[in-house]
Length: 481
Ligand code: ADP
Image (cartoon, rainbow, N blue to C red; front, side, top):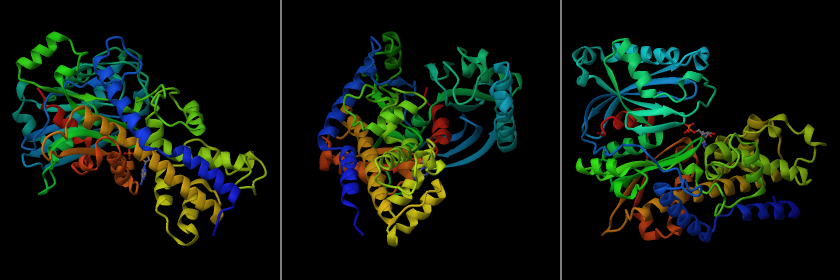
């Protein structure tokens, strides 16, 4: 089956625009390092700097830690509570409960209503699963420690304090903004006499780093080098790594001195690399990227994320298909745009999960893709259309994975982690895209070897899945003192 020459030539043009060359990678890596340095400095709030948020986590687990820790995660629709029993040998046992958040609490009149509910759920969890530990540990410094993943914008001021900047994701409780959310949760735990101490404000990316650092080595031969980066490639993308305290210029000098007097050398930085290159100095930009940015919730921001993460890959393909239709090149049985299947006209309807099926479809006449597109978009396609859809899918995912290598190369080079005889480096990753998209990790590695990390360096980098950053990772944050 060959594709009509005009269509193929147009598609080749788009694929060409989506191709990430070695030159783009190298420029990207240099610019990433500069943006990271500016972010650590950030004297004048340089708009070209990455956020590079200090997390106050100053120790990385070794895998030998023991004991029972708690974690709680307030995300979009659920409040998850879990306990992690660390066995001290890189393994752990996790118990978890998921509580749907009552809709009326999301816009309650006062913060107390929400936080009383959260404290109660933690109390119930502790009673059910850790009744004995809890009753033994009522003295203040013997309470069960809890790492709180609070997935809203917070201005964190220490490991265990941070004020809410604004609500997102449908929450709206006026009197909570500007308050310390750790104190809010702690005060309600205390009121209910629940023997739990909120010891850390956690973040899922930092959690990914810590959870991989703890688990690496659980299987013989599984740990090769220290864990340098925790990264997420899911709905969004972000990464965290330990930075030398001396390099974090934006920390107050007296605080740095205090940390050093305690023998601390590093602090984990939450890079927020989804915001890399918001001014589009180096990132490849097609007209589809411009269109998607316009209809996104945060135009002008998270430009890196909009080319790399799971939320956007399907949307990029959808925009290209609509464009090819408008140019009279595909789906010409539909007489006008309004007649196209509704789902093909609906933003965010095409999930990157569907792209993952199309990517590896080797069935006759791409019948598996035909079914996937019918199911997902109610879109009937010809064999010719499916051939170009597969070509485009492969190009979109490859661009995402290649760009995804930029922060890895940037951090490897910036921290000089690979310097030294045969030094090896471990990277923990989490998120459906990197876990399930066929070949995503292999493409990431390909691109890594094309950067200054080189072939030799790339072979000494080990990228492993780190599960459950907001569970075990958040719990591990509480061990940083
Ligand atoms: P989150 O990042 O929201 O915590 P996930 O890590 O599961 O959750 O990521 C969700 C994103 O991954 C969505 O954009 C979804 O479309 C995408 N996704 C889910 N399954 C797959 C898959 N098999 N292949 C590629 N992408 C997937």
